[in-house]
Image (cartoon, rainbow, N blue to C red):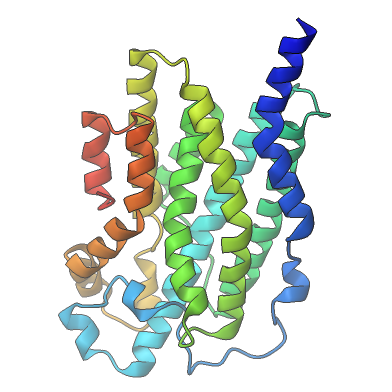
Length: 300
């Protein structure tokens, strides 16, 4: 019996233990690492232009260089604001998951480390959006209330797989931004910090999703697959608030129409999610009902 318990502890804490070691060796303090003092240089974009929701449209071709840069700054701020919203959901789900579990275990200690990371990231994103001269973009009221329900009711693999979806989409996007010299330097630093630290979070989410699904029956897998897919659709469709267009000085109605029909942006989203979809397929979470929502979100 004691031998079985020891083996289980090694198995359960293995990934968490390695992530704790990695975090101790490579973590950042955004308040120190990011240049908050230098005034915003409007000669730079806020994100790689190719990731703009209007890139590749007729409207984009009509914009001046200054308008394009302002639009990408507003879009980057919107993505940051959506990130804060979801990170708050994430923190609550993780806390609920480890509540009353053994705090001496590496798994719980890693969970608390991840929450600490997310707190720093949220503050970093908030300061970054403010420096980009953007307002606090918030999801629609219905989406906020759906998020409230999700963070309260989601459990097990649904919680961790949804975390993975949100972070994977951001990861590919931000890897492009952090390497792009057209992007304002402080945003590149923010993206670099987030990419490095979120890579650990994604490893943990993948491991937890696999473990939680190991003994899941057909019905549970079907229900959880749909919950994850619906959550993914809501998260991705909320990333760029339609108010960014008016705040960038554009015709909001026209911009919304062209953004919705923008095949280039849809292709960018699909390419960013290729690895994620492969993982979800291996976990048998790409059910027929779930695929409907992934296709609506342009993730597949």
